[in-house]
Length: 166
Image 1 (cartoon, rainbow, N blue to C red):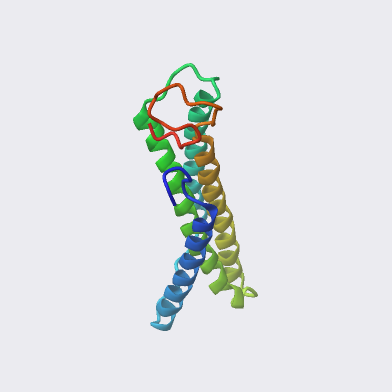
Image 2: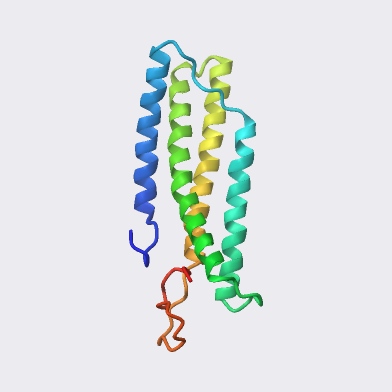
């Protein structure tokens, strides 16, 4: 990953797979020591959806300015913070995807029991919401990219095609 490229999708996939493997192993250890799996409920969807929407709205505001549709110029600090937030959402969503997928996976063998099936379904729903968060992060990062031009005569110190790091 470099400053120009940003976070790549490949990094998100690696984070999701590693988080899923580590989470599955952790859940198996907890269960073998006599503990119970964590309960997943609908309340966990609220912050996932809220952060997804927040990332998209903030990145859209930067995109509107970069396309010449916005009237208010965002500060360099806000542009940088928005890009970093989008990148954190991309990787954080990938990690949460791994966690929730592992939670769903451990409930799969006993899916014929109603309570286990409910946890399996909630795990899958949360995994989809985490995937949406990760996708929103990658899309938002792309929206914050300064469009390349044929020449760089604006002398703003930022190379065209670079992320809006200010």
